Length: 208
Image (cartoon, rainbow, N blue to C red):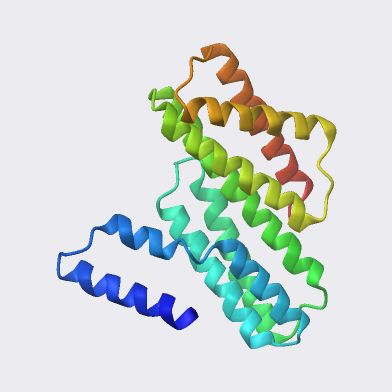
């Protein structure tokens, strides 16, 4: 399966170079290997004491975050670049054998997800301001997904207030994607509430 996927990507790039395949297809092929899969592989390799492979997966995730930062909103760039640097340092330490607990890996991944959530949320707010409702809804959906993954990797329970903010944010995401009629003030409040929760959790799990 992996070889077939690799062959498909190589073939796609060949066709792209020949001007036959659009870049949107390339993006779809690249997205098949998600950041979550990379994180999971890194954790598993570390637990199996395969430090070189774990380091490679973590370095791969650092490159992913750096690529995200290039395309990020102005507000999201700094956090994404900071996360990529933290992942690079983690990869180096794992390879050296100086990471003594899987908890450090999990918390680093949680912070990466907070950075991704914040950037997607900023994009959603910017798109809403431009009256691009459907795109704003898609970005907000991504923000919610990343935010929930950050809790999972940090091993933290989602508090009642945060859970409520996520629920309202998910409802808003669906409304925006469907281009349903919404009240501007209500959208602004829900977006701000979700932003505050992402920021608050980011501070709670910040590297010491």
